[in-house]
Length: 120
Image (cartoon, rainbow, N blue to C red; front, side, top):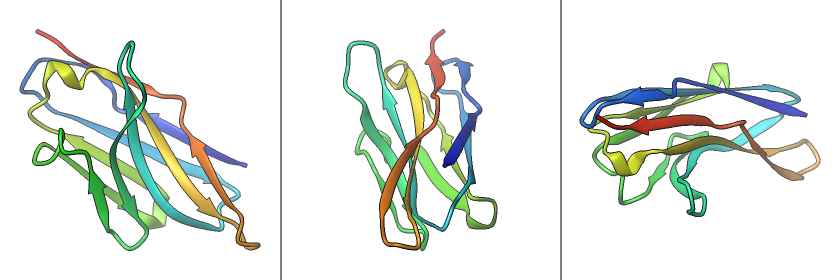
């Protein structure tokens, strides 16, 4: 089993910044990629950004130039730096971890979610 613990959400004014963190622990053989998704009220969960073990990143067009994802492989931790936040960024942000075990089985794990609210 793998546990994901998120932190860093909160209330921020438009134009402000927040930094989310997500640490993975447990039976980890090989993390393929880690990332962040978000879900706003009444909407489906959507990709925000992902980063592979080699550092390759992918992000939604809506956050390009404002959000940056990075990771510390030694700590199995992924970060999401969010700048120039907008009210439409308000959502519950979920950490995701895609893992391979020694038998080449693949699993997805999710964090419990952290609320980000952008409002004046």
